[in-house]
Structure formats: C-alpha cells, structure tokens
Image (cartoon, each protein chain N blue to C red):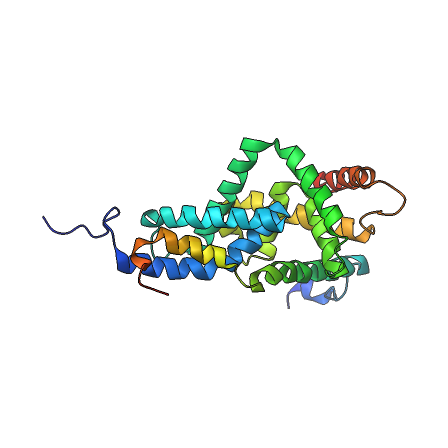
Length: 201
Length: 63
C-alpha cells in the first residue's frame, strides 16, 4: 500500500500555509463582492469574514491550482443567501437594501456619480445585480459566473444584459427624486420602473 | 467576382442611438469597476487577519 496521492484529512502545514496566503490575497475582493451584495459596509465585512472562515474550514476540499477566487466567491454568495433565507424574505431585503442605499447617498464624502450607480444597483433584482457585478466588475468570465451562481451560462448572459439595460435606464431617467417626495414613494416608482425595464426583452 | 461584393458595405448603418447606448454602457461599466475597485483598494481591517491567525494552529510562532 503506497501513500495516498492527495490525503484530504491529514494535516498538511505546508499546504495550509500556501492556501492561507492565497486566501489572504483574496480578502479585498471578497470584501468588495460582499459590499455589493449587502449594500452595507458593516454587514459586508461580517459576511466576508464568515466566508473567509468557511473557506478556511473547507480548505481540504479545495483543489490547489484551481480558481480559488471563484471558489471563495461561491462560498460567500451561498453564505449570503442562506443568511437571507434565515432572516427575511428576499423581496423585503431587496427593498430595505435599496432604501438603505437611498439614505446612504446623503454621505457628502462619496462622489455623486458612484452614489447614483450604487442606488441604481440597489434597485436591480438580486440575481441581476450579482451577475452584473461578477462579470462587469469582478473580472469573471460568463462561465465562471455561472458556476458561482449555480445556473446556466445563458442565464448569466441574459441577467447581465437585462441588468445593463435596466441600470442604464435608471441612471438616465435622473434615477431618483429625493426632493419633494418621500424616499419610500420615490423608491416604489423607481422599483416599478426597474422591474418593468428588466423584465422587457 | 462575388456578386454580393458589388453592394456598398454598410459603413455606418448602425443608428446613432445605438452608438450612444453603447457609449453609455461603457461609462457604466467603467464606473462599476471603479466602485468595486474602491473597496478592493481599502486597507483590510486587522480583524480579518486576526480571525484567520486564531484559526490556524500552525501560525502560533509567526508575527
């Protein structure tokens, strides 16, 4: 009987060390992805830390040399949706995240154009937002994004293109009306519009 | 000669509105990356490395 080629359960400090140093380089990316999913810096860091620890605990199942970024993003995404299922219904969270983003744009330190973009992103359905972020900002190919989201490549392509169209329409329409109307009222109108646009073929 | 070669190639048959939409998409794409990269460039809070250090028993001796 020879030695196992890849012992999964045996402690391997050398491998662990390599794994950890790769994982550490991915932390900034995980934080950024978490921020776009939650729309809230504190919740995002909690999520990113949870995902980082889940990745560490599951390190034996990771095949060194394969795409660790995609692997950790998948863990983070699964963590996000399992927490979401536990606490609130999805639609409620989306609505609240969007309203929180609307409030957050009063931060005078942030550049206006990005505020508008954040607000617009907050209005997209969650699955469109994540597809657009993964492909448009995260640097993933459609195939990788599909693997991360657990759906077909064609589905990712369609979500990305719908997200792009809806986002463009939101930004062009001036986006939002903060003066004169209540945030909730403005949000309702914008969400309805975004839904109509993103649903259009 | 290929008979279809006689017709003039469509140099700018794309309506101007489509070009404009494309341009806007590029702007949105650039902003999207900027937004993401802004977070990527933030210094990582110490908490992350602390948690990882505590979880790794082989890391006891390292700074």
